[in-house]
Length: 303
Image 1: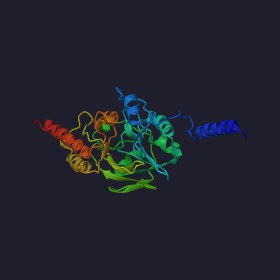
Image 2: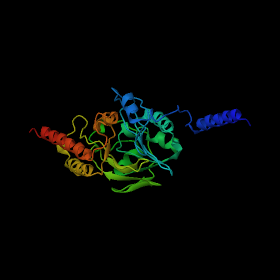
Image 3: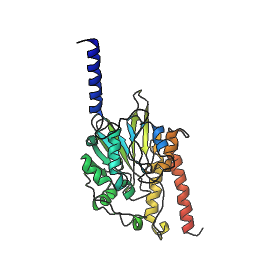
Image 4: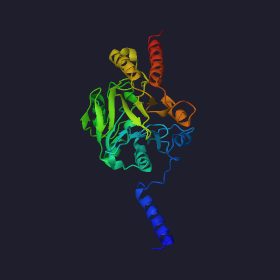
């Protein structure tokens, strides 16, 4: 075979290999198109729950695969992956497409876990579980809402929450339990601030250069409610919040991610206008929440 023929054959083989390696239905993605800055730019001025967003590598093996307004986080490993949060019902196809576009097979998602049981974060969970074949793990309070598809009656936002498609929960977790897939280890932290089943998640993520950071996916820290609900009439709920906030502040937290990116200025940090890595981020996030809770309780008490 001549050198010219050999070069043509190798070029054809390389092109064919590239086509095979691409996720089905996905566009060719480059390091530039999967960059945090590209995600921030695509979502500039967009914060609706279903606003489409591209996938992006946040740090190491941690990827953003959600929408502009609702986070869905993929932690990848050679033995399989874990997905944290699903988004609204209509986001399911986008999350699946983003997983593929990032270069991963949705069928390799072994577990799906959630921050809390509200429809804006788990509306797509049943569809994603069916599409991936993944198992779901949850704390007891979250499990009850996921399996019935209905929010708990003691949820402060109960009156304004939509139902979801029921989800099969395969494992019931306790505070401090871990979900493990190979070297991927996510730890569940009960932080019942925003909802009865609120769960924060932490894991270590490392770059190819062995720069390792602790990622904290801290659940929503807002204490909002349906009209007519008074936290001062529900001391057990207030006690749970006051237990959950310190637990959230104590999370190992080099990089903070939240279920709503805007809660932690994630897009601004990905754009480089604010630091992505901040060991004080979880404490600052909780301090602001504690101030809002104090204001709410004072207002209800007429002070």
